Image (tube, rainbow, N blue to C red; front, side, top):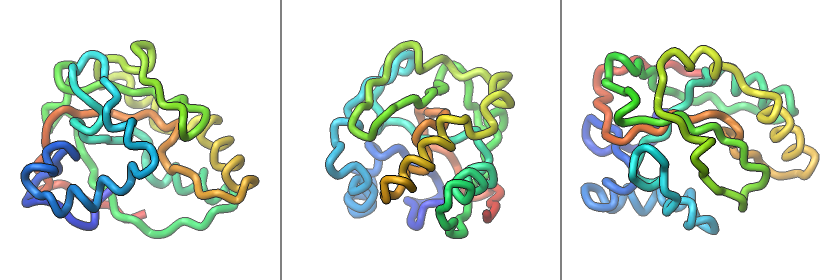
Length: 172
């Protein structure tokens, strides 16, 4: 997703924003209110914490939109960066694939079996929302709550910052 505000011409992990752009950090850290412990989760293979990586999704936003609308939610037009892992040096040394299977918002264990070193060849198998995503959206609709859009969606967690000035942007 293209954030509403960025620091310069790069995407930075939340932990870096604390130092280089404190006002942006204060704004983005609000997403973790009530679940601050998430930012302290240790990520296998990267030897870093949850807030020390950039969170990317191999699932196309149009597929997320379809799943959300299929559950009865309204979609709001949003812009997204298109990031080619090969062009940006994303590989097994600086990224993991995190398979998000959290059953409830408060349960957030990251265990070794859910994080594997990044493998470009796996991305096509992760490009569509799973049944768990669809069921999560339906459950949120039945409970009258707003879903976390990317819960149950696999993530590529990248340890580093990314240049954004030349990235293509799509709007869905």
